[in-house]
Length: 261
Image (tube, rainbow, N blue to C red; front, side, top):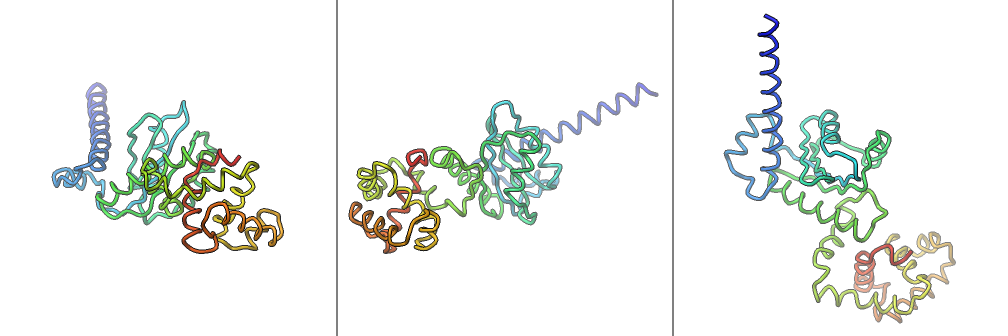
């Protein structure tokens, strides 16, 4: 009898493991291009994966020595109906059910407390259905790469905040985009101590609100006005107009932060 029970137990464990592996494979296939195959979707539904559930994708970049599997298991146990897919050694895509609310800074804090070395996480918007989720997966991939390149100190990046600069960053080698950066380059050429760039960054962060910008920089509004006039003179565009502010804002968003430190 004990021998039979042992065999039965092992058989169940093997079955469970096989089912888990198939679920992992299916998630990866459904998120890949061409993952709309009715057969795959049908199989996912039969296995209880709820492929049409609205989800929000998070792309984690992990430090060396971390395993995506362990983080995947923790997220899946804590958030039912999550999808976790690891496409690279130090990368984990987590698609949480959109109905579940998550405080992102606190989640990052929690993971830090548990000893996970999360270098950065890119968070997309709510995606409806598989096609939307695949699209959003590509966006968070671009967002993570943008963050690594332009904002290396930022660990939490949301698509809502950086959607436009990320779209432009994808075309960073395009001639037309290069022309867009010309006004900012003219400012940088005469900005030996980085004061004007710091002012522009603050101006963009405070949506062109003069008092808030001056307070953040610790200067008088008259000093801010003088700097903005200097920026207008050097760049050839007026940062107080929408067009001028947009041209300079986009330039600032595509400039690596390390250049202003």
